[in-house]
Structure formats: C-alpha cells, structure tokens
View 1 (spheres, one colour):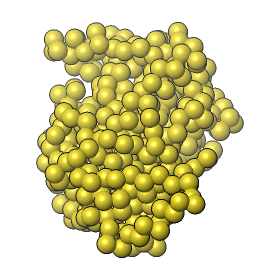
View 2 (cartoon, rainbow, N blue to C red):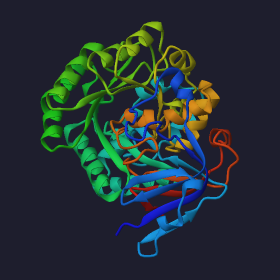
View 3 (cartoon, rainbow, N blue to C red):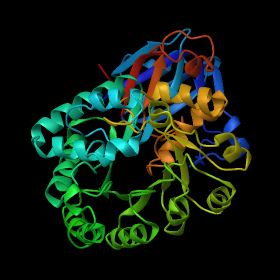
Amino acid sequence: MYMKLIIKNIKELASVEPNEKLHRLKVSGKDMLNLRTIKNSYLIIEKETISEYGLMRDYKPSMASENENVKVIDATGKMVFPAFCDSHTHLVYAGSREIEYIDKIKGLSYEEIAKRGGGILNSAKLLHDTSEDELCEQALARLEEIKMLGTGAVEIKSGYGLSTEDELKMLRVIKKLRQLSPLTIKATFLGAHAVPLEYKGKQKEYVEIIINEMIPMVAGENLADFIDVFCDRGFFTVEETERMLMAGMKYGLRPKIHANELDYSGGIQVGVKYNALSVDHLEYTGDDEIVVLLDSETMPTLLPGAAFFLGMNYAPVRKMINAGLPVALASDFNPGSSPSGNMQLVLALGCIKYKMLPEEALHAVTLNSAYAMGVSEELGSIGIGKKANVFITKPIPTYEFMPYAYGSNKIDTVIINGKIQK
C-alpha cells in the first residue's frame, strides 16, 4: 500500500523543472549551468509520482490530514535531489578481476591484457561457468548497493556471453532483475562487445552469428530495449557496426554505441548516422565529432570511472559543452575497467577530471543520463507527474558539496517509486 509522503523544511530542492506542465528531456551547452532550485521548500509524493512542491510559506498543515495514510519527513538542513540515472553499466557479471588490476599497476595496457585472454574474454569464461541464479544473486547485491548510494534508474548491458546461449542467459538475468528490483532498468544487447577466442581471424563469421542468430532470438523473447556495438580500434569496424545496427533496428532495438575509447574510430559518426540514443566513452573526440553530434539527437555520454581506473585520456568535455552539446555521465560499472557504480563518485569525477561546474555535472548524472537511457520523460528532474525517485541528503551546506566531498556518502534517505528504501 502506498503512503503519501510529505517532505517539508527542505533546505534546497534541486533540479526543479522551470515549467510545471512542459518538462525538458535534456539540457545542452550553457543551459547546463542553469540548475533551478527552491530554497526552504516542501515536496509531496502520492503513490509513485511527484504531485506538488513549493515554498514552505505556502505549505498548509492540512496537506498532512490525519484521515490520510501520510508520512511527514522533516528535512531541516537537508537537500532533495532527483535520483541518479546510470545509463551505462555491465553490472551482470560473475566474480571479479582484481588480478588484472595488478597487471595494470605493473604497466600492462587494456589492449595487452585483452590480447592474452583477459579483459572481456575472461569475464565471458567466468559467466559461462556461472548459473543464472548465481548471476542474479550477485547482480541484486550490486543493485542494492547503488540504490542506497542514490541511483534510481540503471541501464544494464549483456556482452560477457559472446555466444548465443550465454548472451541470452545474461539478458534473462536482467529480465529477472527488473521483476526483483524497484529500480527502473533498461536492457541492452551487446553481443558485439568483443570477438570470442574461437573466432579470432574469423571475425566476419561472428558478426554473421550476431545478425542471423542472436538478434532474432533476443527480439523473439523481448529481452532488450537497445542494441550496442563496441566500435573501436581492435574491436568492430564501422562497416560491421553498421550491419549489426541495421539488423537490430529491424527488430525495434534502438542503437547505443561504445565509441572512440581507444582511438578516432568513426564510432561517433556511425552512431549519429543511425540515430543512436547515446554514444559512450568518447575519449577521442575532435572537432569533426563535435560538429556531427551538434546536428543530432544523440547524447554524448562520458564514463569518467573507466578513464580514471585505466589511466586513459579524458574526453574534452569543456570543449563539447562550450560548443553547445549536452553531456551525460555514467558509471560503466563493470569488473575490469570501472568496478564501481557509485554515481556520487562519478559526479565528483565530472568536476575533478572534466572541469565541469557542479550544476553541469548534476544535470549530467540526472536529466541527461535519463535521456541517454530513454527515460527522461519520467525521471531525472523534479517535476509534477514525474516518477518519485528522489533522495534526501544528510545535512550539507550547499549543493556544490555533493561533488566536493567525493569520498563521503552524502545521502540519508532514498525514495524509489514513492517508497522509502531500507
């Protein structure tokens, strides 16, 4: 049974829609600096949605009628934000890869580790040997962790299967997670995450299996919302990417792309060409890529956790925003290159490493990241009728404190679908 929630005496209500009736789907360029807030405010949640908010001076005690099933939360000294939306994760995986982490410390590159059977191929072997039930149990624990750190929506990719059987196994686990977790979950088919060892030198054959076998079966069981391809140096070519995207689109799977993490790969251009919802990583983004993105509906998505963990180049985010682009940030939560789904840390890395201002970074982990997973109509900001995925902070001095205190958990209470999480 749903309880009416009233949060009152909010020190500052952040990321409020400027128009109560017309909600934004994303924010771009200089508009990312305009973070609308209401100080000394209240917020009312009824059933699963936000029903009202405003200044405390307009709050009436009758709003908390004794005849209703109402819970009143006093947020004195605390702030309220929309829950984070994490638009790029690989959080269904088996075990961990800390031994490769040691190899990285010793100086081996991501590509060198992959060439000797590590990286994605290592995770694929572990996943093959792990049951659906065990994968689901491990992933549920990760979902619980990120939920209590403020994430209310998450996209989860396959891609550690690399065979029809195991890709389907991963996607079925994601389907179970949707039933078991209160989080909003989107599923992405990423059979083209790497080339299995048995297809080394026969990459075209593996592409044919993805097109002719995997995609029809994924669509037949309605297991995915999106299709993704790792279009980069040493992985899949632009031509192969185009063929796989077109095959997925025939079955209603909208593209998302891993692009330009390792080089100028053409991945951004092919993503825009096929109206990808997002192109992700983007460490190698130049003037040509920015121009292409400006003339598109595709969300550039940066994954600072991976660049930080791998010691890679950082994407030119300041240049992108100054050119007028929107930017989203996501965690890339995975066992090899970003073993953390903490979006509070991602928010901080956006400021520390990309030189984003706090307002820009807050938009990047909420509304723009919601757009990057196709849910910004209902999530990512505070608006009437939007889904009530919000969190209440501990007492903090300013909203700038959220990225500033990068090592602390600033969250006191998490509310998902209008319910307090415990």
